[in-house]
Length: 102
Image 1: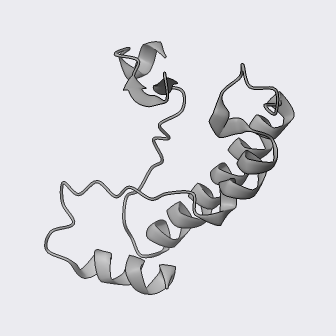
Image 2: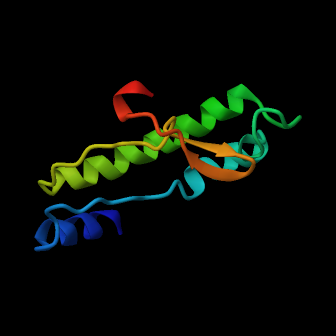
């Protein structure tokens, strides 16, 4: 499905100026749930190892997505939301820091 989508995007007249956002799907959910990552660092179930495993999983997925796009000639690069976005009281919040200063 990913190759088909990348191929369709490469042929789309709307490609210029397009920002593609993808989620982690099952790549990050297992570790995040097991190690309390979504509950925040103050929660008793949270572990930094779990955080690292979650980041590793979603980074691998992003590499797979980028590779599929690049193979179709799309000039793609990854801009992960971490660490620009943070949870504050359970709500996703922008750090307001310019990307070069995060």
